[in-house]
Length: 205
Length: 205
DNA sequence: TTATTTACCGACCATTCGGTCAGGAATCAA
DNA sequence: TTGATTCCTGACCGAATGGTCGGTAAATAA
Image (cartoon, rainbow over all chains, first blue to last red; front, side, top):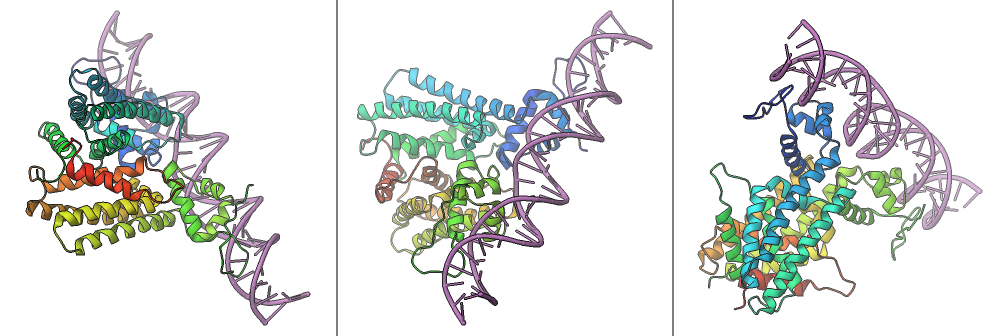
């Protein structure tokens, strides 16, 4: 069996060295994203990490807990940017653009976790909880869009909720094709493109 | 067990009446979409239809065949509109808008099948085949966008492929929230909203 | 009535699933 | 060396999975 132990850097810990929860969680999110949550067995995941299934259970209470931790990480990141945008001062339209840019940042920074979140279906209690938290975020976004429309800064011929859904449908679609580059962050360029197209439209102005 | 036999309308057939492949396929696509392909067992599906698992296997060769038939139906619809748009005459930008409108039509008309297609991961040969066909479609779309940019009708400050991805990321996101209404087709209104936002942008003009 | 055709059922099978358990191996401190 | 701590393994368990098989039920045609 090919072992690729991730030894913890710096601070020595007690006992036999090996994986920690964070490394397991990252691998889990990536594998769940690639093959789907239901399509990934704990044995698959163990093989990816290069250890036995029972060793995996030393780090984690169960499969569902992995999903919980992973989706929470994504949700915490997204909730933070929504709260930031809502609390910010200035016109709602500007705050919405800020929200889009920050959301792209989070998607890029936490890609495997957000991808997993966006694919959750609702089969288990954990999944339904994640969906509930997502809905709260979507609601806050729709409110911000509605404010921007009321301010007269956004087009009023499309329902605010529909606008919000299409806008973030575009933003979130990024998890379908974006893959990180080795050379630092291209999140800013990506956010520029998204904002340009979303706010000013595709057509040459 | 609650039986809800779908008796075939009109033309009488030979033998005991019951389900036909089409009804099974529709239920399969809906259930796969709700719970995920891997998250749906053949027994689950049989229960949804109100019959036994072995009866299900009388209609279908296997689980993977259901996925194949369902994704093919979505891909055939999408391929048709792409070919129509490509073959159409007029400026590329107009053909692109036509493609978006027709795509919305297909998404609405074949919602469970397209939704399933967009969630396919690549675990089986069938899934990989579907993904390959999808890539061909995406490629044709990107070419159309590139032509429209070359014509000077679309903004050139964003890579054509990125533009294509974001545009259809927005279009495809519709499967995440759109639910059919009992009162006929609202596909046209939906397409209007999508085109307005995508081509002219969110901001008031 | 009987033959034919189509649809269905319950019992069964090999495999895989998430998860458990008792113990072994690697590390550090004393 | 010994003990404490942490990480890991192989064997195992009951349940669920995709799929099969022999036989039955309901319809039309002869």
